[in-house]
Image (spheres, rainbow, N blue to C red):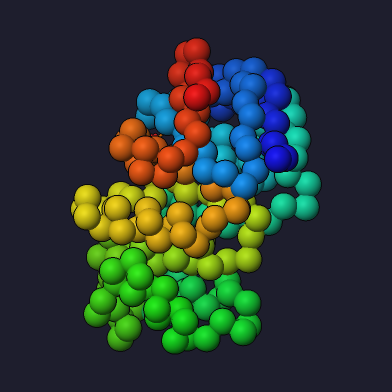
Length: 198
Ligand SMILES: Nc1ncnc2c1ncn2[C@@H]1O[C@H](COP(=O)(O)OP(=O)(O)OP(=O)(O)O)[C@@H](O)[C@H]1O
């Protein structure tokens, strides 16, 4: 199995260190959860992995040619169009609207079809963003606190959906919740002063 190697990664913002000589391994084709206190640098780390932020020093090996899909903390959906079109724009052309509707229903979405995204609730938007990331043509899916706004029952339904749909892909999930790590049967990386990997 291939591995993504993060070696001696360092990042500062305006002279304040965020990541300091970080070394990590993430197994491809598996689910890895990243936990750690607020502000420790989890989002910064995934932004570096996706190439959205440049590290000051260090290397990431194993990402050459890899395609990413992501659920960002702030969704980044197109607010003026509907859920189906938001998903459709990242899908292969042969994926039909009725297939997309089935996917959206699989995460418990109802009563969304006639609405623009900006008329959906926070938890509904989150699920649209999750379906969009899962349906996109990618090798690696990154989710930054994907279950914000979902009640416990929905969360389990969505975790099962994600597991079923992403089998074999590399999935990296930032979470504050150990129960989510268990529900995913994921490898766990805890960022902190002395980061741990399990
Ligand atoms: N563009 C930026 N400019 C300046 N400082 C930044 C920037 N992005 C992040 N930071 C700072 O870097 C630190 C780490 O932020 P980051 O968002 O990576 O943490 P996090 O672990 O994901 O936090 P949370 O769990 O609250 O989402 C914080 O102190 C934050 O204020």
